[in-house]
Length: 214
Image 1 (spheres, rainbow, N blue to C red):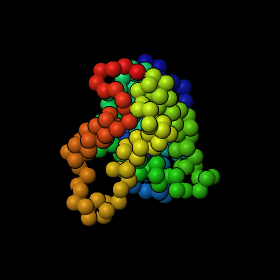
Image 2: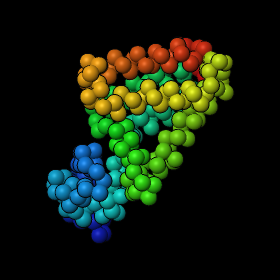
Image 3: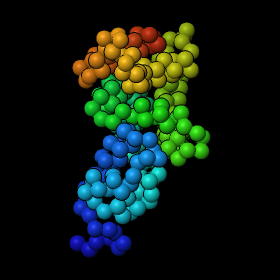
Image 4: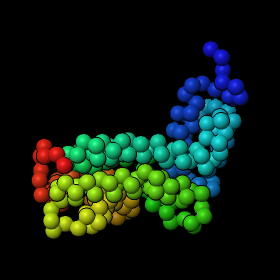
């Protein structure tokens, strides 16, 4: 098969390997300290592959963030399309499962948003929120409200805040604070917490449960 013109040498898994190493590096180090050359070396590919696939360091970071968030984004879209209350519970369960086994995206987002407004890392995260996460989040709760699924005494904006808090806080709580409370943030605990928080949503903000569609 003829190679794509201008493509640097490297296997078909080069892009995936770069994303995987980028997840590891960007989650452990501040953006400005991450070396694209080191990422390429650890991925076992030429650094030119970063330019080929992502353009530059910022492009690699953006692709990494978006692909890390992809499973969650998919479930949110399905929740909106299916219009079933239990699909919102699936969003919570999926989010907890993905975050407990993969890179800690909430921590990375939290850290990024603490940076200056003109910082590349923050700009990438803000773009992800503005382009995808926030519109999906708003649409999901707008649909819940329009279809009468939310209790009449529930403020949709406050419901969205509660939803976000339940989703994110377990992943940004300082380890020392969790230790003081005797909490071990392992996959077993997060699985139990996901079910608990899903139940809080189900019985706290909805006026219908079960298989009722929105």
